[in-house]
Image (tube, rainbow over all chains, first blue to last red; front, side, top):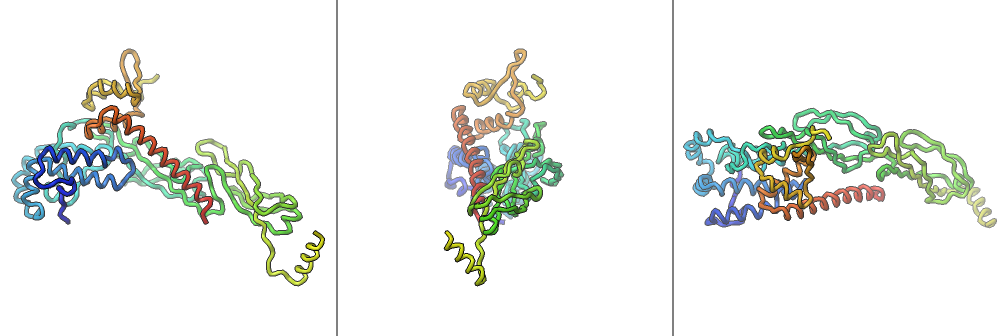
Length: 297
Length: 97
């Protein structure tokens, strides 16, 4: 366990007055408060440190103990015992834990020195607060989100049955109401935010509900026309290739793309790009015939 | 409208220990929609988490109403830019590999 320099965290010196501590804390809190830094883990970590530093330095008793034992925190036990009874009688509410992090977020250093107490600022004790919002990430394959399906996910030890709508986007976040942390003092539960990471290891590229695929055709089919069979996301289709199809030519297969998110039975398009495969390693006969063709043009 | 998803402003004020003038000021700058039904004022439960955030910004960080308005506007911009970034990243996949 490492010594934590709370003065350094707040950017103040050891002789700072209560007013200076408060000012430094407020300034840093405005910068790193989770409400103004949504989904920023670094800011959240920093805010916890600032909060912890403030917990210690803004409380004269804690500050005295910290100044006295600071680096020798292991010897603070006697001091702790003397105050234990008093502390046990007090039920404090932690100021910022409501929607962002749990009460166990003080460092080991803090807890070894001051025990598992929570904030001493009692101005909001007994206030009802919505529980902590949880953020989770769910990794799925592109094929998994072609059809709506139910899946059980475990978040903080709780099993939650989810319906994953077809067509959900990579990076999309959905909110599951009331599945976050329990509310405090009778407040409503927090929400669960699930961010979807959709891995694509298919031959298709996706942009929203539009799918893209590159299909190779041989030179003769491109020149003379013909029929090929290619796979779409939901099965094979036969395609007519027009005579004289150019390399890079595109065709649109309406309704053969990806499902449109939350629009039942609606599908995007599949755009197929043809690449013409030029024959290599020609035999002498083939070379001769190509030369004849060249002469004709 | 059903009152099931509405929260009485008076109850909110006593629960969160805020003055009703705070709610009125938020309404004044367009940050909060308040519905009046039979002379009682309500907010919709869906905006509760936003209201809680405004209370925290006000009480924890000493941010005034105008400041909260600015923060909320900027947060909306951040969210829209994040969505745009996600969409651009997804499009970029089309050209990779």
